[in-house]
Length: 263
Ligand code: ADP
Image 1 (cartoon, rainbow, N blue to C red):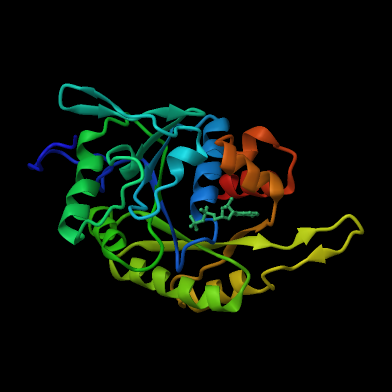
Image 2 (image 1 turned 120 degrees about the vertical axis):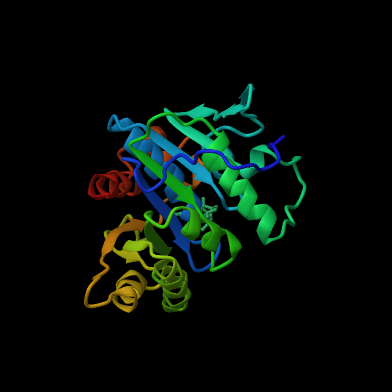
């Protein structure tokens, strides 16, 4: 049970040395959570101390993606110790609600919960904190933007032009709360075929489009990575063993490793 809110020091404030990267998207189903989970594990594999806050309240999937299905945090006094998977410390709204129940909280409740994650969950010193935000431009994105205005934001989109349009909006909201949009990740890009051709199931160009739309003269935004469609990536998510662990030679795993180095 999360404690009733009262003021306490927040971790990861403006003076913190932890790099905070919020992963957002315009709409659901573009692979935001899958990529966040894999990116976290990839960063941890390179020796960094990594934490993930799954703030995707309505579609929390990080625990399952990291094999933590049903795992609850340990409570020590007033502190909540986050479960650890693949050397990544993980906290998720999904760990505090009954299984198979829908979260129908309103803004203030969400805000308090996020705030408590930042105060009561003991992460210790981290090099990188990844935030898996809900898609779109809702209350959680705004709360996190207010609580952690110094966080960097990456926007995930598919190569489809309609997806790129909505991706742009979520990036712009982040910027309104003072966050820096550091780049776009294009996911579900071409699937290499046996005959050497590439199947572009979701078209192409969405990443470049979104980056161009999000760019300003002062703050150019580039495509940080283009992650191909990958059966191994999807399967890894389904069984809770991220592709960067299960099949590191898979092109999607390689692209995620390359992305991790650029952050
Ligand atoms: P979101 O967090 O944006 O809602 P998810 O991470 O839950 O999206 O991904 C949605 C679905 O797409 C999942 O079933 C996931 O396994 C699959 N998926 C994500 N990225 C890829 C990819 N590059 N190739 C194949 N399947 C993918």
